[in-house]
Image (cartoon, rainbow, N blue to C red; front, side, top):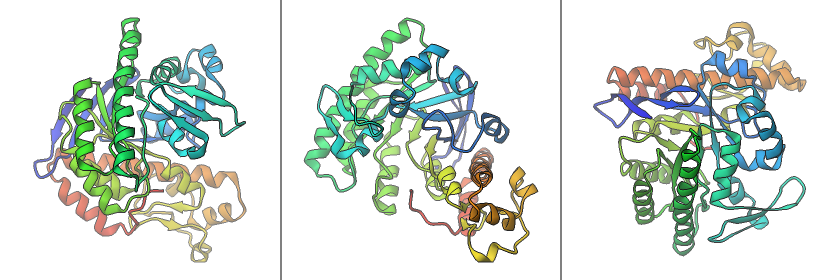
Length: 376
């Protein structure tokens, strides 16, 4: 399923190939987020044009709307959204966590109220697997319990106990689907909040479960950057080298490059498209706010070094005009550029790893890039 191709001798960075049902995926890889069956303001043709081999969708949102009967009726999520490459689906655990007062969690599963109409629903680890099998995702995630930064040790232990139990239950039902011919992969998720002993216990449980891949969850939930870096580094160092490693929910160049440096193969985030829609675009010198008056008479591209079709065809002045007049085209162009920028960053990182110079590449890129390190 996963083959390591090259390793950087000075770091834990590596390149590889992930073999999935809808084609191979080169790693490291950034996965655009199509939460509700679409990457916002981006067509499937645009995603393929940029070069993406895998995107992410969300079980919670698709389960509520349009509902499983609709997606099952057409033959799965690939057919529904006209995407013939790979799809990873998040189990919905993070979304349920975000509902706060609208959910109740115990060992059986999670009861929650729909954010759409307030209707009550129940999802168990088994049901999460069943839903993702209906979706036809190439990689599905176990249902897990995520804690916010600042949670007590006692609460974190309770959540981890449930997550580990749900992981083994998810694997059991997933194996029954595999026996029936279903060909997707299940990833387990490391939790444990920011307690090193709980993270170690969670990693050990994931190794024992022996799922095809392992994800690191519970990061970028409001913690300071230093704590993010420390927790990611310590957790990644415990993961088996033969399995693909996925850090959930990171999308800034700083966080991505640090993750790659620590041997992470996969990451996703809504950041590039959401920032784009809100008028913030990536450049080699850091992100800029296109709405600033200084761009009114600037007829240069967003980034003169960028080769994307947006930078080849449009000026900052025109993009600022689109943003200020609330034209839909702005969201499309800014989202395309931001996704292209991150994809090119990943391609350059792969090249640096294969040439055994990742540390130099990371240092040179970040010395020019002036962005912040806070995930949004």
